[in-house]
Image 1 (cartoon, one colour):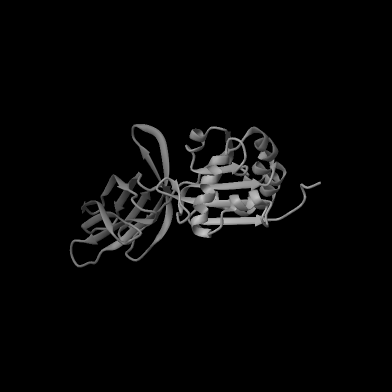
Image 2 (cartoon, rainbow, N blue to C red; image 1 turned 60 degrees about the vertical axis):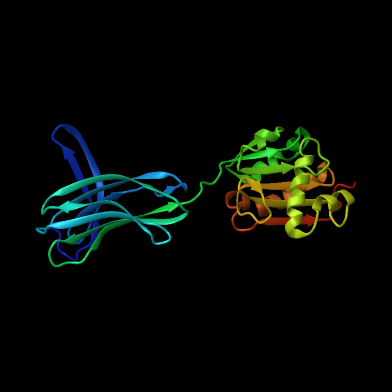
Length: 286
């Protein structure tokens, strides 16, 4: 019997008369019984997830049980309620939905029928957040790709780089990189479009600055999205990082200089709407 007020965590072994399989579970020693609650650690927003509860009432008291979820804003969703008899067990399997980002708490409370307040026998957290993209598309012509691909891979580590010269293919990905400036083949018109969007927030058109050679020979800029489109006030995917130089040599230098400083943007574009670095160097003039 589990005494009231005693709490802890122990391993229990479960078997079957009809099978030689033995399953080990960690159970929480609650106030009135042994509780095993199973939920995923992380779930993307908008998805449903499974909630599984095994509870054994080890006391001699009649209990009323309640399994529920509390969302990040404090709202509660009831998953199951029912009676639990003395020295009996229950198994509950339900589904819950993750509507918004943040930490959800899945809890199981019990309350004695006579003289008692609800107590939480066990609980677990579910973190709801957008998954980090594992693939990054690189929109570039062949020459810029060959010049920069090794530096990009060294910078981005375990992320898979997908090179394309197709704008429609590039737009299928959430995490994006563009190599080349406003006059570069394949990507020039897209770079202009991003420059115009960035200008709304920075009041500088970096494409113009680069073409005219006004105080910069290379520019790195990152822009987040909103509603599926680039938006200088956005904070979600898709997001893009543009590495551009006055010529191909400066584009390569731009990647080497700024990729490490901007790579985190691909994992989480919510921190900043727009980031721009620009510099005037002369390494490519000789």
